[in-house]
Amino acid sequence: MRLISDPEGKLIRPIGAANDEHWSGFIAFPVTMVVDPGGIVRWLYVSESASDRASPLALAKTAASVAKGGQLA
Image (cartoon, rainbow, N blue to C red; front, top):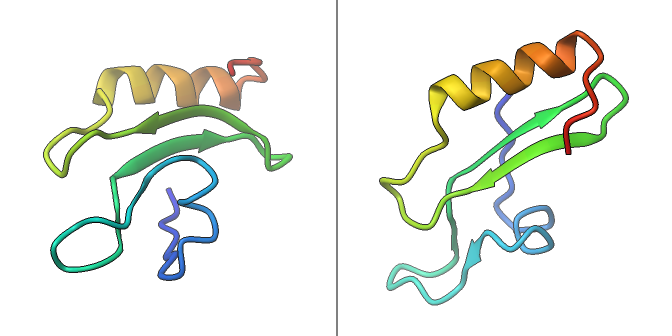
């Protein structure tokens, strides 16, 4: 697993996860993605709030499928 810091929102804004109207300024909604070895995003979950997270089971199944060459999108 890798974590990406995106303080300027160069990735967050294009995928629709930016919250420019937060009381403290720009923040991003939590995002979980599975990226294949070729750099293609195969699964994306954009949370609707700070407490909303992707299902660990769905994430694990998706990551395992992508690791085996599955073509989820």
